[in-house]
Length: 631
Image 1 (tube, helix red, strand yellow):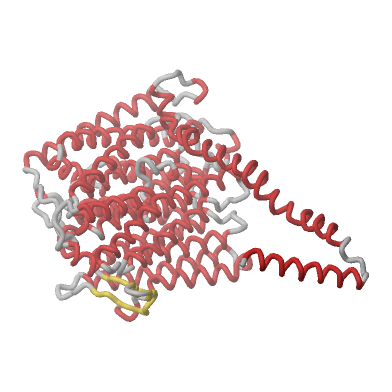
Image 2 (cartoon, rainbow, N blue to C red; image 1 turned 135 degrees about the vertical axis):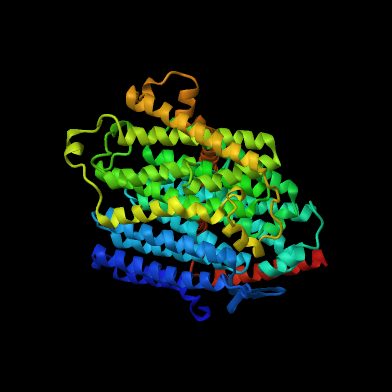
């Protein structure tokens, strides 16, 4: 497979170029087919790479293609790193990406500009693969910026809608804030180690003592980059707004791949973060705050995609808690399971929206179980998986995070457990309101309710299977089965959390989780199905916590008041008084001033030769007198 590795990112890039050139001349079956085949071929090659990495005699390989940048002491190769971490991420990106491409053929069949959509999807896959395959921070950063660009293009795909354009710009700008931190971290890495190559940086870092100020500064700067890309406090508000893009975009970028780039970067840099307990503690605290904060907001959201968006922010917080406590393999475990069940939930939501003729408000849905049997069953599996019902995927990864958090800090474990309960509440609230009760849509919507085409339901079924069995790659010790993922990742994790909970604690955790979930399922069923209670309309909400949560703690309004409006005022001031009132007047006044001066000088051009000679003599005398005076 060595000779084919370069094709993994190149195939989606070729798909992007080909679809982009042919553009609207392609029917959707062709544009979607070309894009899907490109990603599928990348998946097949990634599968071959994964099998090679599994071999006992495998040694991580750095493949150099050419010297990219050479300036003074800085030499950067365009090179890929193939090891256990990149092999897993390749499978996640290409595997889930392929399913979402197939789904998009059915979802976007009515879209006139489908070629542009599929070309953007392929370009995104290319940059994401570049990000996870790069052997140094600069190649990673190129992919990092590329997925940010593609996010902007895909979120604003329906660019004729101003609100969607604003959401795209918001995502782009907020990511740039984090990216500046990442870039400064890379600069500091080069200044400290004289290289940006992973191997040289990590080997050099092992010579530093724990909590060295330079290493801590590097880690904090890198984490700022992760905060922006992975939507953590305070740079999380772009992700819920990113739901403005088509639903497959939400599934691909904001559930399975792009937002996990920050997690991947920290796991890849685990040597640095392990040497900075101070930075790791910051990561754990920010992740915990984000997980709880977003979960509380999710309780009162009524847009089906917004509920899932805040769920994504919350689940990313879980992953950062795992990173902060040193359980890097556990964080990656949740990245994998989350990719399965969250992509499933987003695509399931897209199937519901497709059936409801574009309706996204769960208060206008209900009783869809019978009309959308496949969507209902797969969405139920995704809901059970994210809430941690055994033996589905989320059960194993979430419980592992809770277990390592318990070994690190009881307060963190407690708040994370409460967050887990909140996750179950808002997810089953969503499930019951969408699929049970009475239909609350219009008669037109009711007569057009139908299951989605196979191009949409088959990816749902595949993801449902993965959400069901994906957790078995990380079995707890109490089941006396190997933790396949932990063993596989061992070569790339320098040090990992060594906390091993007792069997009694594990059994208690599982038992309490199951009992709590059963109570939540019954309570939400009784509230939203038996009693038929519906969320209140926004205008009818009384002042207090419900209104606060519905309005998302007014964070956007606070940012608007403290940041956006002052910047708008400053830009207006500089535009009116500095640019137009001063600079423009100088520039615009130059022409008339020269014209006025030339008008004065014109009088000296009399055409009288005697006058010219007289002027020359006067000038010569003036020069001589000036010379005598000065010297």
